[in-house]
Length: 104
Image (tube, rainbow, N blue to C red; front, side, top):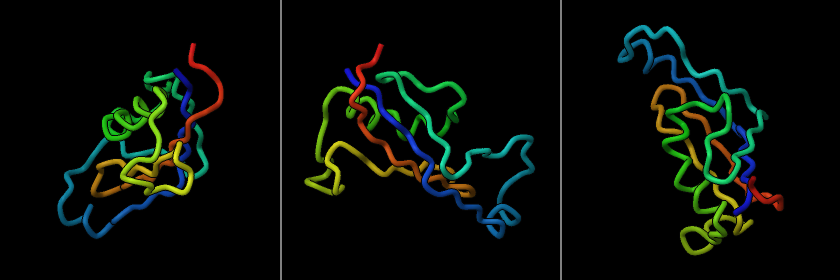
C-alpha cells in the first residue's frame, strides 16, 4: 500500500448562493490553495476536512492500493485523480497522486 499526496488546487466561494440559501455557520472551509496533505494509505490526514474526506476517500483508497487510469484514461497521469468536495457553497478541487513511498 502506498501513501497518497493530496494537494488543494483551487477553492471557490459562491457568495450569492451562501447569502440566498445557507444558514449562518460557525466554521466554514479553511482549505488554502497549495496546501498539501499526505494520506498514509487509506487513513485521513490530520487536519483534513471530514466532509471533503467523505468525497475523496474512495479515490485515495483505490490509489493507495494500486488503482490506475480511472474512467478509461481520464487523467494524463494514470496514478492520479482530480476530485472536488461536495460543498455546493465552497467547493475545493483536490489533486490526488499516488506517492512512491509505502504507507506505514
